[in-house]
Amino acid sequence: MYTQLSASMMCAGFENLEQEIRMLEEGGIDSFHVDIMDGQFVPNFCMGIQDLKCIRRLTDRPVEVHLMIKRPLSYLNVFIEAGADVIYVHPEADYQPATTLQAIISAGVTPGIAVNPGTSFESVSELLFLAKRVLVMSVNPGNAGQVFLPYIGQKLDKFLEAREKRDIEVYWDGACSEDKIRTYAPKGVKGFVLGTTVLFGKGRPYGEILSEVRNDCI
Image (cartoon, rainbow, N blue to C red; front, side, top):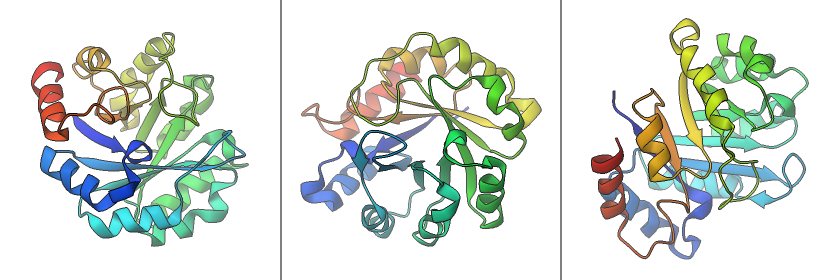
């Protein structure tokens, strides 16, 4: 099974975003992960529609949008029109998350749910009939560079067990270290969002890091 590696663009160097994207592409990144935060659903502001449009314009590779905002259904069209290939929403953020997922499906975009550390498998189980992706958060959303919460592994295993029955793919986001990739890629995690733990701020070429991850961990 091919394991996808996605770049968490909130961690990229925005002083020259185009160069960052080119270096990531040349290094073999599979997709770009864009975190949108509203300062209400999470205690931080991060990236915006102009950032998304810029990234979409600069790459032909898939762009994933992770909406950490309240009432995402009200703003879906903005992100769909900006060219998102995948949209993750948090079930707690909307009154009727199933309606939100259905709207994403109707727009021809891949629907996903993002699952907070404090959100149980059981509480989102029914949504797995609509979602095609599950983004399991191993840290509380809102900031980069947080510490992995060790109890997440047990919950992640439940989503992996449900993959075939519910026709979903499982992805990992947050504190994604090489040892976590080495452990969970063979278990069936389809992709990992790479941020400051592995990829950014290391003073090394992205291609060198991504090659090491693929050769040593997957």
